[in-house]
Length: 167
Image (cartoon, rainbow, N blue to C red; front, side, top):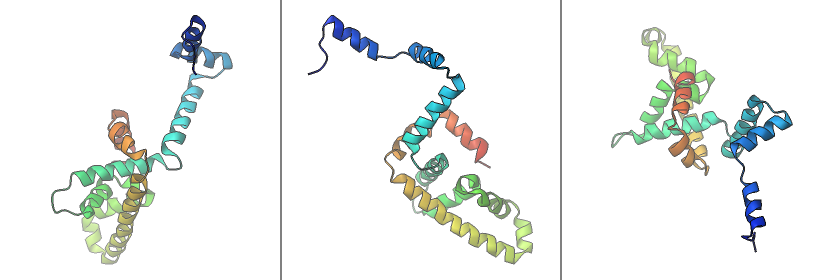
C-alpha cells in the first residue's frame, strides 16, 4: 500500500509538500493578515504545548529547576525556594512581589515593626509551598523536559523572564 513511485505518484507527493511561499499565498487568498496568522500559530502552539497550564508555570518550573541544579551538596530545596522568592517573585503570584520586596529590601523598616515582619514571614512560607507544588505539577507533564532543555534556554524567553518577572 502507499503511493506508487510513478510520475503521477511523485507529483502528488510534491503537491503535499507545502513551502512557505504556498502558506503566504494561501493566507493572502483567504484574507488573513500577518498578525492574524501569527496569532493562529501562537494559539496552536500554546494549546498543544502548554495545554491547560499558564506559560508562567513553565517559567517558574524551569527557574526552580535551575536553582535546584545549582545547589551545593548538603543544601536543601529551601535555598532554591529562597532564590526564586528573592529574584523572581512575579513568577509565584502578584502578592509575592510586594511581600518579597518588603522582606528582602526594607530590613530596617521591618525590624521596627515585629508584628508586620512575623506576618510577612508567615505569608512567604506559604508561597514556598506554592513554588514546590507548581513545580511538581509541571514536572509531571511530558512536555516539561522538552521545554526546559530547548525553549527555556532561548534568548527570547530569557529576555522575557528578565523583563517581566525578574527583580
